[in-house]
Length: 172
Image (cartoon, rainbow, N blue to C red; front, top):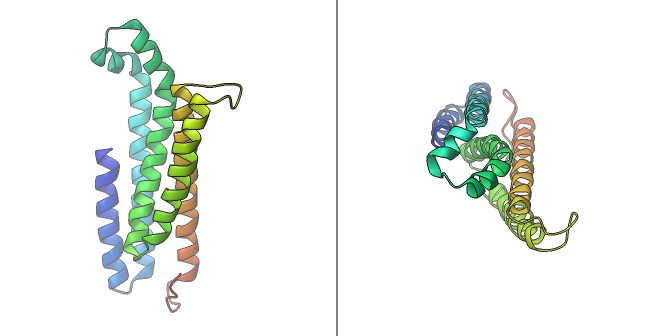
């Protein structure tokens, strides 16, 4: 969590500086470099965690039942980490462009409605074959986080189409 958030802050700062200097091409390059670095760092962290999952879980519990449940959720954690890095840095880049309301709306609708309410429903109600318990909650949270990432990235591409280097900036 700390590495993607640190990259997000640094990327947003450098992107905002480039925007303030009127260098939209540099802002775009910095943002994409930061996004690639954050996703790559999250992927490396996720692969490392996946590779050593039994050892990591063993650091927290020696109860076989608890370890079994934890191991069943690791796949969700891996996708969760990558999508969280992508949505986090994309939201920070959008803030560099002074766009904060759209990400808030995406978070409210997708994460809270689909992720939280949908997760509760899939976990405790007969959906998708019956109540799925904790894996249903993590499934819907992962789906919602992936969708949030894609929506924020799509919104960022929309901003880029409107603010092309050498073209007058148009607010979204």
